[in-house]
Length: 431
Image (cartoon, rainbow, N blue to C red):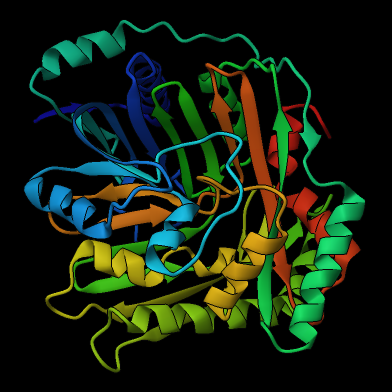
């Protein structure tokens, strides 16, 4: 272990940018960035895991792998950090579900790696802890990096895979399922894609992160495929005996001035439709956590609290429990995956309808990126507000979505989707 201490915040930020540029030379890296935003459950300002010392690849959708194989990998690496992702289609391994479509950009169902090099950026101090077999060499390589200051450039065109008219048609079909009692909430997503595109993923991430900084931002490179994520949502964390989930339901854009912004916040906070969406998902998350909890310990610590970010206001709830003894990490994950905010309720029925009606497979979108630490804790986000890029194929993809309830209006929900995609649309100059 090696520590680097900085005199001021700007020096640490410059070092972090150099470190990420150095990491981009490797085939695998995971950068988790809290953006110094309020997160009482977070341990670090940022974490950068680079290079794969060992790895677990959960293959393609049709194979017979089970969660037990992932657990075996975690068990053999108990003293190590493990970083990786879980794609939405792992739902098919948890329930009797089937995804009839193939994602535009295909990742393994799940992938985790033990990093060769690890940088832990302290939450409170201007300090970076380097864990590597060659820390002095790594420190030198990072400091020698020259930051590229060129403006981000996007080459290509983006188009929706679902037209606005088709979105409204699907929306109304799903609403009919709600009105006849098949479900009472469902998350409808749509995809935007671009072929023959070209971007600098690193410049794209820093630009997107500056447009829309978020507490669960991340950048993940898996060979030549990238996830550039500005997620405001925590899927699930473990802190000792406590499990914490923080579902989001309820979104409004920021106002043009303080007075308008205050009005929008007040409207969102008291909107019956937005609050009902949030409460429904809180009930779902409470049910999911019960499967892993000591009896009687599931608690709602915050219900539909207002949280403001640079581009949007959100209603966020916090649900927690004490985890019961003798339950392993992958069982806890399987008991709660996919994130309830991205499915609907009842969860299985909602996912069946999503498979039936959505015109695009979600892939890594609606999944999760995060880590398992040597002390037994873990922390995973929800992959939303994310740009997915395949450098070999020149493909770009991003999804946006929102909840449908009995009170929902198709046109308003479509506009809310665009609000959620504002950061990506601004990055690609599509606004």
